[in-house]
Amino acid sequence: MIFAGYAQSSDTTLNTNQITWFGIDYTHCYFITPIDFPNTIDLKTKLKTWNDLTMYEREKYIEKTLIGKDVEFYTDAVEAKNNEVDVKSRIEDNESQADLLKEDQIQSIINGYNIKSGMEGTGLVLIADIYDKPAEKGYYYVTFFDIATKKIFSTERMAGKAKGFGMRNYWANTFYEVLQEVGKKY
Image 1 (cartoon, rainbow, N blue to C red):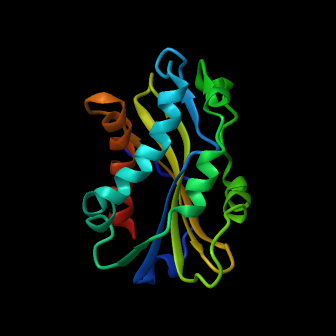
Image 2 (cartoon, rainbow, N blue to C red; image 1 turned 90 degrees about the vertical axis):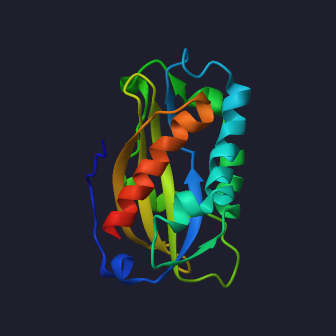
């Protein structure tokens, strides 16, 4: 159910007791297929809805996952980036047409975040790579980074199974599963 690869480990990630949740970054995510994502206006609103879900149901998605960690929430930087996404250009017929992320691109994505001055500590962001309806999976780069310098401590591509009723819950299960795996590892 969970695919993990391309991992770079860091003692900093494992030993930190405080994490700031940045949210789910959809700026590079592809949505497969047009038949499965026919309404681009609805899809655009879902980007915010999925992030809001991690805030409104923070106990289920974040706090129960990162047990023993003091979690703060700062989603402004990712939300600003998600607002710029042209979802119509991110919908493809199949995975082979999508220009999927490479691990070496993650640092430039983090560098693009406009983080308020004075923030420090360890940040956690899920960078969505692909929502693949035929495969019923959502793929993310789980990325821990130093907030002040934006230097990545670790990034790992993981996948969660899509399931549930309605578009919101169906894809929310993918990041729920990924976050559960993160909790077990970190």
